[in-house]
Amino acid sequence: MIDVVVIGGGPAGMSAALVAGRGRKQVLLIDEEKPRNAVTHESHAFLTRDGIKPEVFREKGRRDLLKYPTISIKKSKILSIEKTLEDSFELTDESGKIINTKSVVLATGVTETLPNVKGIENYYGSSIFSCPFCDGWEMKDRPLILIAESVQALHVINLLKNWTDDLIVATNGNRIFDADQKRLLETNNIRLIEEMIVELKGTDGELQSIVFESGEEIKRSGGFCTTVLDNKLPFIEQLGIEVNEAGFIIADVMGHTNIKGIYAAGEITGPSQLIVSASQGHMVGIGIIADSCEEAFQSI
Image (cartoon, rainbow, N blue to C red; front, side, top):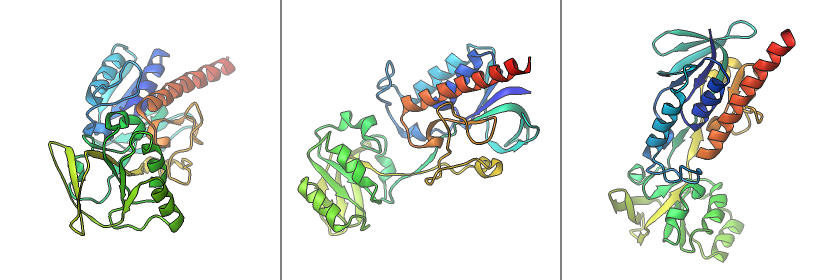
Protein backbone atom coordinates (compact mmCIF):
# COMPACT_ATOMS: atom_id res chain seq x y z
CA MET A 1 0.00 0.00 0.00
CA ILE A 2 1.25 3.48 -0.90
CA ASP A 3 1.40 6.05 1.88
CA VAL A 4 0.25 9.05 -0.16
CA VAL A 5 -1.27 9.49 -3.61
CA VAL A 6 -1.20 13.05 -4.92
CA ILE A 7 -3.65 13.73 -7.74
CA GLY A 8 -2.47 16.70 -9.79
CA GLY A 9 1.03 17.71 -10.84
CA GLY A 10 0.87 21.49 -10.58
CA PRO A 11 2.64 23.62 -7.96
CA ALA A 12 0.32 22.45 -5.15
CA GLY A 13 0.61 18.76 -5.99
CA MET A 14 4.37 18.80 -6.56
CA SER A 15 4.98 20.75 -3.36
CA ALA A 16 2.84 18.36 -1.31
CA ALA A 17 4.64 15.38 -2.85
CA LEU A 18 8.05 16.88 -2.15
CA VAL A 19 7.39 17.54 1.54
CA ALA A 20 5.68 14.18 2.09
CA GLY A 21 8.45 12.34 0.25
CA ARG A 22 11.11 14.09 2.31
CA GLY A 23 9.10 12.99 5.34
CA ARG A 24 9.92 9.38 4.40
CA LYS A 25 6.47 8.59 3.00
CA GLN A 26 6.09 6.58 -0.20
CA VAL A 27 4.42 9.05 -2.55
CA LEU A 28 2.85 8.51 -5.96
CA LEU A 29 2.02 11.66 -7.92
CA ILE A 30 -0.57 11.11 -10.65
CA ASP A 31 -1.06 13.78 -13.30
CA GLU A 32 -3.00 13.99 -16.56
CA GLU A 33 -0.46 16.53 -17.86
CA LYS A 34 -3.16 18.95 -19.00
CA PRO A 35 -2.28 22.09 -17.01
CA ARG A 36 -4.63 25.09 -17.10
CA ASN A 37 -1.69 27.46 -17.56
CA ALA A 38 -0.41 25.68 -20.68
CA VAL A 39 -1.25 28.80 -22.73
CA THR A 40 0.74 31.06 -20.39
CA HIS A 41 4.12 32.21 -21.68
CA GLU A 42 5.49 33.31 -18.31
CA SER A 43 4.59 32.98 -14.64
CA HIS A 44 5.30 35.89 -12.35
CA ALA A 45 5.66 36.96 -8.70
CA PHE A 46 7.31 33.72 -7.54
CA LEU A 47 10.60 34.52 -5.82
CA THR A 48 13.61 33.07 -7.71
CA ARG A 49 11.25 32.00 -10.50
CA ASP A 50 9.80 35.31 -11.73
CA GLY A 51 9.19 35.09 -15.49
CA ILE A 52 9.65 31.33 -15.68
CA LYS A 53 7.76 29.44 -18.37
CA PRO A 54 5.14 27.12 -16.83
CA GLU A 55 6.47 24.07 -18.68
CA VAL A 56 9.98 24.80 -17.37
CA PHE A 57 8.59 25.18 -13.84
CA ARG A 58 6.92 21.77 -14.09
CA GLU A 59 10.06 20.18 -15.56
CA LYS A 60 12.30 21.57 -12.82
CA GLY A 61 9.75 20.56 -10.18
CA ARG A 62 9.64 17.00 -11.39
CA ARG A 63 13.40 16.79 -11.42
CA ASP A 64 13.38 17.89 -7.79
CA LEU A 65 10.84 15.20 -6.92
CA LEU A 66 12.60 12.35 -8.68
CA LYS A 67 15.80 12.96 -6.71
CA TYR A 68 14.03 11.16 -3.86
CA PRO A 69 13.55 7.36 -3.97
CA THR A 70 10.36 7.83 -1.97
CA ILE A 71 8.61 9.71 -4.82
CA SER A 72 7.34 8.38 -8.16
CA ILE A 73 5.31 10.03 -10.92
CA LYS A 74 2.72 8.51 -13.23
CA LYS A 75 0.81 9.99 -16.14
CA SER A 76 -2.79 8.89 -15.75
CA LYS A 77 -6.29 9.95 -14.72
CA ILE A 78 -8.06 8.81 -11.58
CA LEU A 79 -11.69 7.95 -12.25
CA SER A 80 -12.90 7.02 -8.78
CA ILE A 81 -11.91 6.99 -5.13
CA GLU A 82 -13.57 4.72 -2.60
CA LYS A 83 -13.00 4.57 1.13
CA THR A 84 -12.33 0.95 2.02
CA LEU A 85 -11.07 0.52 5.54
CA GLU A 86 -11.02 3.17 8.24
CA ASP A 87 -7.54 4.27 7.21
CA SER A 88 -7.29 3.50 3.49
CA PHE A 89 -8.67 4.33 0.04
CA GLU A 90 -9.00 2.46 -3.24
CA LEU A 91 -8.33 4.49 -6.39
CA THR A 92 -9.14 3.36 -9.92
CA ASP A 93 -7.31 4.93 -12.84
CA GLU A 94 -8.31 5.17 -16.49
CA SER A 95 -6.63 1.87 -17.33
CA GLY A 96 -8.64 0.08 -14.65
CA LYS A 97 -5.67 -0.32 -12.33
CA ILE A 98 -6.45 -0.31 -8.60
CA ILE A 99 -4.20 1.74 -6.31
CA ASN A 100 -4.45 1.43 -2.54
CA THR A 101 -3.28 4.28 -0.35
CA LYS A 102 -3.54 5.60 3.19
CA SER A 103 -3.89 9.26 2.19
CA VAL A 104 -5.04 11.21 -0.87
CA VAL A 105 -4.12 14.77 -1.81
CA LEU A 106 -6.52 16.44 -4.23
CA ALA A 107 -4.55 19.06 -6.16
CA THR A 108 -6.18 18.83 -9.57
CA GLY A 109 -6.70 22.56 -9.99
CA VAL A 110 -9.70 23.77 -11.97
CA THR A 111 -10.98 24.06 -15.51
CA GLU A 112 -11.44 27.52 -17.00
CA THR A 113 -14.09 28.85 -19.36
CA LEU A 114 -13.30 32.04 -21.27
CA PRO A 115 -15.88 34.69 -22.24
CA ASN A 116 -17.96 33.78 -25.28
CA VAL A 117 -15.95 35.89 -27.70
CA LYS A 118 -14.89 34.41 -31.02
CA GLY A 119 -11.12 34.00 -31.27
CA ILE A 120 -10.30 35.05 -27.70
CA GLU A 121 -8.27 31.86 -27.23
CA ASN A 122 -5.82 33.19 -29.85
CA TYR A 123 -4.87 36.03 -27.49
CA TYR A 124 -5.37 34.47 -24.07
CA GLY A 125 -2.04 34.04 -22.34
CA SER A 126 -0.26 36.36 -24.79
CA SER A 127 -1.97 39.75 -24.53
CA ILE A 128 -5.24 38.97 -22.74
CA PHE A 129 -5.01 37.64 -19.19
CA SER A 130 -7.22 36.95 -16.18
CA CYS A 131 -5.04 37.91 -13.18
CA PRO A 132 -3.80 41.50 -12.70
CA PHE A 133 -1.34 40.39 -10.02
CA CYS A 134 0.17 37.86 -12.42
CA ASP A 135 0.41 40.03 -15.54
CA GLY A 136 -0.48 43.60 -14.58
CA TRP A 137 3.16 44.76 -14.59
CA GLU A 138 3.69 43.57 -18.16
CA MET A 139 0.52 45.42 -19.28
CA LYS A 140 1.11 48.62 -17.31
CA ASP A 141 0.30 52.01 -18.88
CA ARG A 142 -1.19 50.42 -22.00
CA PRO A 143 -4.65 51.10 -23.42
CA LEU A 144 -6.47 48.01 -22.10
CA ILE A 145 -9.85 46.35 -22.33
CA LEU A 146 -11.57 44.23 -19.72
CA ILE A 147 -13.95 41.68 -21.22
CA ALA A 148 -16.38 40.78 -18.48
CA GLU A 149 -19.66 38.90 -18.50
CA SER A 150 -20.44 38.95 -14.77
CA VAL A 151 -20.78 41.64 -12.11
CA GLN A 152 -17.75 40.18 -10.29
CA ALA A 153 -15.79 42.20 -12.84
CA LEU A 154 -16.19 45.28 -10.65
CA HIS A 155 -13.46 43.95 -8.37
CA VAL A 156 -11.13 43.41 -11.35
CA ILE A 157 -11.85 46.91 -12.67
CA ASN A 158 -10.89 48.38 -9.32
CA LEU A 159 -7.57 46.51 -9.42
CA LEU A 160 -6.75 47.31 -13.04
CA LYS A 161 -6.87 51.02 -12.33
CA ASN A 162 -3.62 50.43 -10.45
CA TRP A 163 -1.82 49.53 -13.69
CA THR A 164 -3.51 51.73 -16.31
CA ASP A 165 -5.55 54.92 -16.61
CA ASP A 166 -6.80 53.93 -20.08
CA LEU A 167 -9.35 51.20 -19.50
CA ILE A 168 -12.49 50.18 -21.39
CA VAL A 169 -14.95 47.61 -20.05
CA ALA A 170 -16.87 45.47 -22.54
CA THR A 171 -19.65 43.14 -21.40
CA ASN A 172 -20.18 41.41 -24.77
CA GLY A 173 -23.89 42.16 -24.90
CA ASN A 174 -24.60 41.41 -21.24
CA ARG A 175 -26.27 43.89 -18.88
CA ILE A 176 -24.37 43.20 -15.68
CA PHE A 177 -24.08 46.61 -14.02
CA ASP A 178 -26.81 48.59 -12.28
CA ALA A 179 -27.19 52.37 -12.47
CA ASP A 180 -25.01 53.07 -9.43
CA GLN A 181 -22.23 50.86 -10.72
CA LYS A 182 -22.35 52.53 -14.13
CA ARG A 183 -22.03 55.94 -12.47
CA LEU A 184 -19.04 54.62 -10.55
CA LEU A 185 -17.35 53.60 -13.80
CA GLU A 186 -18.12 56.98 -15.34
CA THR A 187 -16.71 58.79 -12.30
CA ASN A 188 -13.47 56.88 -12.79
CA ASN A 189 -13.34 57.74 -16.52
CA ILE A 190 -13.96 54.14 -17.56
CA ARG A 191 -16.04 53.68 -20.70
CA LEU A 192 -18.59 50.88 -20.58
CA ILE A 193 -19.58 49.16 -23.84
CA GLU A 194 -22.48 46.73 -23.61
CA GLU A 195 -22.55 45.73 -27.29
CA MET A 196 -21.58 42.31 -28.56
CA ILE A 197 -17.95 41.89 -29.56
CA VAL A 198 -17.80 40.86 -33.21
CA GLU A 199 -14.07 40.46 -33.70
CA LEU A 200 -10.71 40.70 -32.00
CA LYS A 201 -7.94 41.86 -34.32
CA GLY A 202 -4.22 41.32 -33.91
CA THR A 203 -1.22 39.30 -35.00
CA ASP A 204 0.77 36.53 -33.33
CA GLY A 205 -1.33 36.69 -30.17
CA GLU A 206 -0.89 40.45 -29.73
CA LEU A 207 -4.22 42.27 -29.56
CA GLN A 208 -4.51 45.43 -31.67
CA SER A 209 -8.20 46.31 -31.75
CA ILE A 210 -11.76 45.20 -30.94
CA VAL A 211 -14.70 45.43 -33.34
CA PHE A 212 -18.17 45.82 -31.84
CA GLU A 213 -21.64 45.04 -33.17
CA SER A 214 -22.24 48.68 -34.13
CA GLY A 215 -19.17 48.58 -36.36
CA GLU A 216 -17.06 50.69 -34.01
CA GLU A 217 -13.44 49.57 -33.84
CA ILE A 218 -11.36 50.55 -30.84
CA LYS A 219 -7.61 50.17 -30.64
CA ARG A 220 -6.32 48.31 -27.59
CA SER A 221 -2.89 46.77 -27.06
CA GLY A 222 -4.02 44.14 -24.58
CA GLY A 223 -6.43 43.42 -21.81
CA PHE A 224 -7.92 41.13 -19.23
CA CYS A 225 -11.03 39.00 -19.01
CA THR A 226 -13.08 37.35 -16.31
CA THR A 227 -13.28 33.57 -16.53
CA VAL A 228 -15.49 30.90 -14.99
CA LEU A 229 -13.59 28.38 -12.88
CA ASP A 230 -14.94 24.90 -12.33
CA ASN A 231 -13.58 22.08 -10.19
CA LYS A 232 -16.19 19.42 -10.86
CA LEU A 233 -14.72 16.10 -9.81
CA PRO A 234 -16.51 12.81 -9.22
CA PHE A 235 -14.43 12.34 -6.06
CA ILE A 236 -16.15 15.20 -4.28
CA GLU A 237 -19.59 13.59 -4.36
CA GLN A 238 -18.24 10.05 -4.12
CA LEU A 239 -16.55 10.79 -0.81
CA GLY A 240 -18.97 13.40 0.55
CA ILE A 241 -16.33 16.13 0.69
CA GLU A 242 -17.68 19.46 1.90
CA VAL A 243 -17.55 22.43 -0.46
CA ASN A 244 -18.36 26.11 -0.07
CA GLU A 245 -21.06 28.09 -1.89
CA ALA A 246 -18.80 28.55 -4.90
CA GLY A 247 -18.21 24.80 -5.14
CA PHE A 248 -14.60 24.79 -3.92
CA ILE A 249 -13.39 22.23 -1.38
CA ILE A 250 -13.31 23.43 2.22
CA ALA A 251 -9.90 22.74 3.76
CA ASP A 252 -7.97 24.09 6.74
CA VAL A 253 -4.45 25.50 6.65
CA MET A 254 -2.99 21.97 6.66
CA GLY A 255 -5.28 20.86 3.85
CA HIS A 256 -7.57 18.70 5.99
CA THR A 257 -11.03 18.18 4.52
CA ASN A 258 -14.00 16.79 6.42
CA ILE A 259 -12.95 13.28 5.34
CA LYS A 260 -10.05 11.84 7.34
CA GLY A 261 -7.16 11.00 5.03
CA ILE A 262 -8.31 13.31 2.23
CA TYR A 263 -6.36 16.53 1.85
CA ALA A 264 -6.80 19.36 -0.66
CA ALA A 265 -4.54 22.14 -1.91
CA GLY A 266 -4.29 24.70 -4.68
CA GLU A 267 -7.07 26.07 -6.86
CA ILE A 268 -9.40 23.20 -6.04
CA THR A 269 -9.88 25.06 -2.74
CA GLY A 270 -10.35 28.45 -4.44
CA PRO A 271 -8.63 30.75 -6.97
CA SER A 272 -4.97 31.32 -6.16
CA GLN A 273 -1.62 32.15 -7.70
CA LEU A 274 1.37 29.94 -8.42
CA ILE A 275 3.27 30.79 -5.26
CA VAL A 276 0.13 30.48 -3.11
CA SER A 277 -0.70 27.04 -4.52
CA ALA A 278 2.87 25.88 -3.88
CA SER A 279 2.63 27.15 -0.31
CA GLN A 280 -0.67 25.35 0.24
CA GLY A 281 0.84 22.13 -1.08
CA HIS A 282 3.79 22.54 1.26
CA MET A 283 1.45 22.88 4.23
CA VAL A 284 -0.47 19.77 3.14
CA GLY A 285 2.79 17.82 3.09
CA ILE A 286 3.50 19.02 6.63
CA GLY A 287 -0.02 18.09 7.68
CA ILE A 288 0.36 14.54 6.33
CA ILE A 289 3.63 14.00 8.19
CA ALA A 290 2.31 15.58 11.39
CA ASP A 291 -0.85 13.44 11.33
CA SER A 292 1.15 10.27 10.67
CA CYS A 293 3.64 11.01 13.45
CA GLU A 294 0.87 11.77 15.93
CA GLU A 295 -0.96 8.53 15.14
CA ALA A 296 2.23 6.48 15.46
CA PHE A 297 3.16 8.21 18.72
CA GLN A 298 -0.27 7.64 20.25
CA SER A 299 -0.27 3.94 19.31
CA ILE A 300 3.00 3.14 21.09
